[in-house]
Image 1 (cartoon, helix red, strand yellow):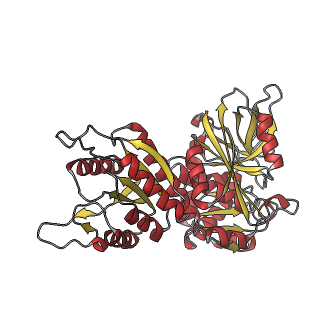
Image 2 (cartoon, rainbow, N blue to C red; image 1 turned 90 degrees about the vertical axis):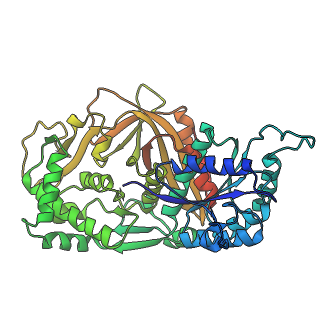
Length: 482
């Protein structure tokens, strides 16, 4: 899935829309429109002989100046359901209209200024832009209205740093859009010993306007048992499961029962338009259906049905942050902070029983579907093995970002930490990676002292800047360990 965001662009000017303003507007738009996943909404110049209608998307110049145009463009952006707004003073700009648009829309805001070109030739020695000065007025207008915003910097449109700011902003907007109003599925109850994954549904409602959609595991089991063995949807899942695992040491009864449970969960996800879900892993599903569900959760996450283990609802929110922060281009791995390496003190094991999406495998040819009791694959495959159903592979190397949301007493915080997966020649159980961090002692002390639990979401790439912007826009305390 390619994540999409709709960004409203406000080219702001003061008094006179010069050729310089027109050039900056067009060049900035060209950069913004070239970014994958971004749809741009911008006022256009009214056709000759027609009356400009800012609320309909046209102004006299294709830019914005004055309160009337600002209020009209805000109405137009609202009708187009923009997810974020970019403000740019092409010259000095107009702080009132820019602030009014941001005030009315209440979406994430990016502000940048433009560099000063050579002065206008002539006896007046006039400057062309003064964006440097006007940007301060625009910023103060946002500040006095308590509107959070990202100040990107001062650029000419063709500078790569501006493009990077646009890309980071788009990803942050995608996360905010996904988090606010999200529907989170909860299937089953948490493990009896896991107070660690307790959460406050009211706090989620008040902070993010989210809804938790609960379902008993018994309902999933009943739905799974209602499917016929030869149901085409069941058989398709079995075929896909076989095709995605070059190595299988599980019996046919596992593949059949897994497909039925997976189909029931897929139906629950799609019928309720979920954004992510947190599902019980044990013990009831093993008892009722004779399977383990780890690989299944990886398959669901692979298909953009983000699934956290052990009914960790806040863990599911962290998966949303990582996935949308990557604009849907790579999948997250829901991990345990497992152990510190015995010989390398700054390595930690990012692991879970077998739930990583297979697209994350370091070697696709070594992706295995195993039983918990037979991770080496050397034992005979047997029917009725309730421990069958774990992916086994090493996760591919590269820079990664860890994310975890936590809430205590209506105060939200987000862990943002980075590291790098180091490839090794070991063979370990489940889906796993050794992650080297700058200072393991600092990271682990932060987890302990800040109340972060033993689960996190991990994704390839450095999402630090994206997640910091998300924290700014949503008033979340960032806890950063880089």
